[in-house]
Length: 147
Image (cartoon, rainbow, N blue to C red; front, top):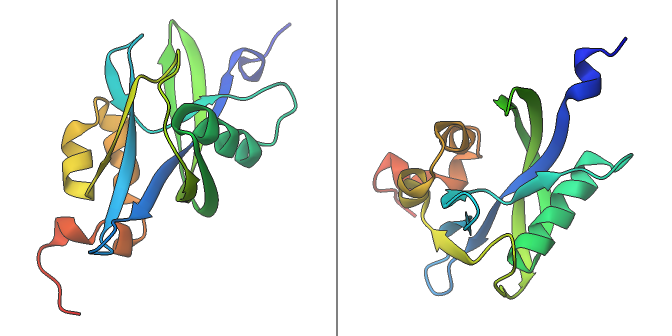
């Protein structure tokens, strides 16, 4: 007899960020997936036995072309896809090098301040992850700051 855990789709991803050249302001990377015509964080299914953090960083590299340094863990997101439970583990991760090239899964990426990223994200569950980011990465949503 199978358990619910047997049917759960396990995935991982990152809320990818970088500092904007010139201003140093944080920008978040969103990916556009033509198959779903949506904007989301880079993520994907884990390979059998794959460590979730390693899978998250692999998916970032595959979907965005960027190498990332992981930061704090973010909330795990759970939802149903075609009646099957899906569980996606997330981390904040800083993009350190790379260049985007369109591929079969992702045809475009954008780098946006947190407030603009929140507006662009298609799924509310993806917006909720922004609330868990360290304050320094979402400070543009809080209004002007000194220093």
